[in-house]
Length: 160
Image (cartoon, rainbow, N blue to C red; front, side):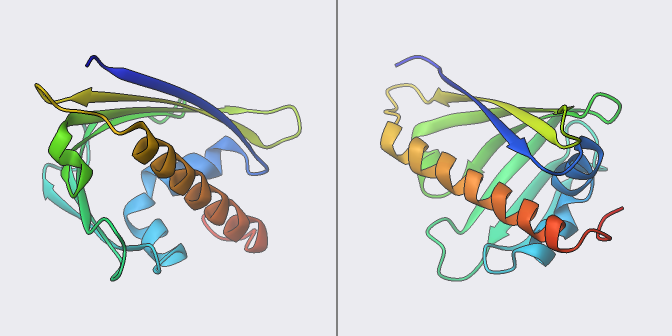
């Protein structure tokens, strides 16, 4: 089985500067603070926060996935682009070599933003990709995104 690629575009009522700040630049502290029922903590295992840095995200007790390891590939603060790869974790990473994510945020005409994501799933040799699991994961990612957006709308002075 070859690489599977999925693209998604989402609208947000929050400008890209703030969305990028929360989801990329300050995500290690912002996401666990905003959604402690989902993310327990994020720790840097190796690196200084730039390209090549490896992080471990631990999820809250009772979640299906306990942790995931990611590696930062590139971050462009001026163009609101962030690329990273999931390189380890449980349980679905058993069948995957890695999952690469590219996130691009642009301004929308209503003052909010459009978030464009490209996700590529790289199976291990003889690995089978479960497309139903991918769809479930994508929906969980969208729910996380919407929960953070709701928090920012309810707390307009947060993360300025």
